[in-house]
Length: 423
Image (cartoon, rainbow, N blue to C red; front, side, top):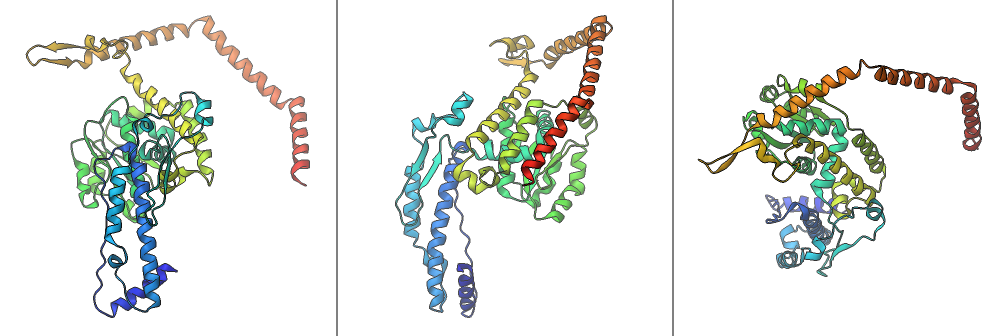
């Protein structure tokens, strides 16, 4: 109804001449990723408050059959008062910042949840109440969005591409999805730090940037399927994909892996599924099916955060991924100074020079001897006997499943199932 009233007011105003529409934006500086949900919630409340006041002004003006300016309907002094209050009060205390999720899983689920509450008591500004620790926009919502779109296997391949410092372009229709997913990738690289270009939102007129020789993580907004198709089939993008670029398509939920010679084949041949990660994916999918899940909506998430079970699952996913990523540095951190054996101190420059060959050669030797050992073991009677036991166990299971006892149980279950649900 307010939209109709506003439209009618706009038509009346048009009779007086040209209309000037002024767009306003709010910029928060000096914030951290951990506090994003707090500022998003405050900003949403501020916008809702202004809309409420403006809508009332438009409705009142429409009834009087005269035009109104949006700037005139909201007193700038009120906005300034709210912004000053936010600047002084919108922050966690040191004790609130120290609140973290319990290590014990049962405590994580069942412990009473503490909250951050701020009530400005200024006209129309809603009270802010958020769970502690604060919802993580990229670390939780961005991770779940990325994880559920390209699945566990796609995410592991994507992270391996980043470990090789190959460029990644994330494309999607919603700015919040693109920025949250690109930022989530930085956290998932832990314990490593991305040392190259990072642009969570790249303007469309800078698409030629994908040909940059410098590795990058970038995001781009698409406006519909045709726009998406034009980006993926752009000649510059195709050339970049031959030189290391991969594309995360959030619209279709696909990872388009680089066609760089040797890289895609190496990733495919060396890929191993992580069963634990696959189980967490199914669990998270079940949680997100619930209409009450805040992971389904960006606005619902930064206002209410993930549920206890969802946050625990996301925490487990991060732990599994970090464990997988850390395996590539085995030997470097076995003890505090283990890294010293893989390089030398350069007295001329006063720096430590790391030699990759010193780190890789022992791994190659260990792998060669491991293969030799396994090859000899496969020719033993012990190994052949183990294979025969597997064969006999499979045959026994097949006979049990097709035997009279199994058929009897199946018919009994079927009979009682129909009796229960056909009423």
